[in-house]
Length: 335
Image (cartoon, rainbow, N blue to C red; front, side, top):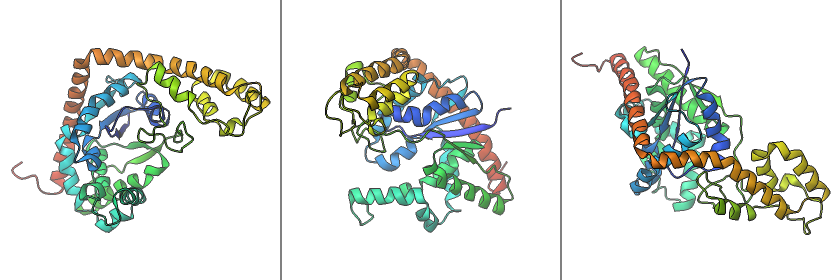
């Protein structure tokens, strides 16, 4: 039997190439090696968007279509919506008794996100909700509800996995249970930079190429990408290491990357020509993804069935876990 992976993604918008190269590309590979559960984490998305549920709702199918379009295979993966598996919420309540508020505030990931939130909305802490501070507890329930052994994450998410492991150890100690302590499966690819050179690519930053972008949009975005600011004329030598166009060539134009680098350094490649080549390569790369997206958009009932089947399969697994947990906790009344 294959070992199980649980991972999730919040439905906050369409996927961009940062998501693809940084995370989702790896999921497509892992689905052949593991029994994989992918959660569309709408409940966790509500910790930031509780006053805008329409945003979360409208992004559910967009995200599902994106995932299917890049190669997530529903015959290999259980793709489901978090809120459709109520056992996760039940387990979150049980786990909330095992974690102190002080411990949650010490979680480096939570500390960073709270600081960002306060910077946006003021320093009085009024904007930080109970749900927001406690989302690592919900995440622990996500993982253990399906007995996930591995969780694919980047370095920045390691504190959240350790929090889950702590919860599991405490649960096992108190209730003499034998729940699995999940392990991090570190993602090899680093975070993908934005078109402007920002370390983070994102919709709110206006520096992302989305999988859904059409040819004209891709062209406009790449033509505005940051290049070596010291290069003045087309035949001036330049430094490709500070050029975002070269950075993206490495992602989608690997066969010609040595030529791109060499010509750039020798002043044999103008920025406009280099951008046009990248535009062609990016469109070529995204074309099959967009074709699959078109198929699913025209067959939305198929997407609905995939999500419903995924929810039903996830619920069956979660029901078994909750039954075992309630027995260990001695709250399995009348059974």
